[in-house]
Length: 189
Image (cartoon, rainbow, N blue to C red):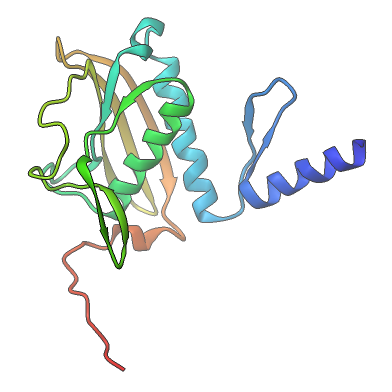
């Protein structure tokens, strides 16, 4: 039985980049892959946001908005959207009251799949979402790394109630920073 536990633990470390301790908490182990390191940094951001937040606020309705490049608050890229999605996950598993603002009124079904999220305001289920907190942030490239600054803002007062920061190496994830303006080319054949 002990050998099976050791093998399971070793597989979790190799495959997922983390291991579960006996106290039920997840302990992050440094990952060898760039995406594993990115995931570990996002977990680090979520830990900071939670540790710096007053306990009672954690249960308040919270929306996570798309992270943007510090030089342009009006659009994002793949990195900003991935960071946002991962933080939604990390905050939810920590017990935050995260609200999904992109939920559509209905499920759209077509040959590509079944879809319930949208960025089209006409398709959204909720035109107004009551949220006490907004998680948002910025990032910027600095040499061979990206610096991410995250914050939790009270919608009642505008006060920043928690912050977090991480420096993430971009080696291996640099394709996430390619602007979305590159046209897609359809290849027939």
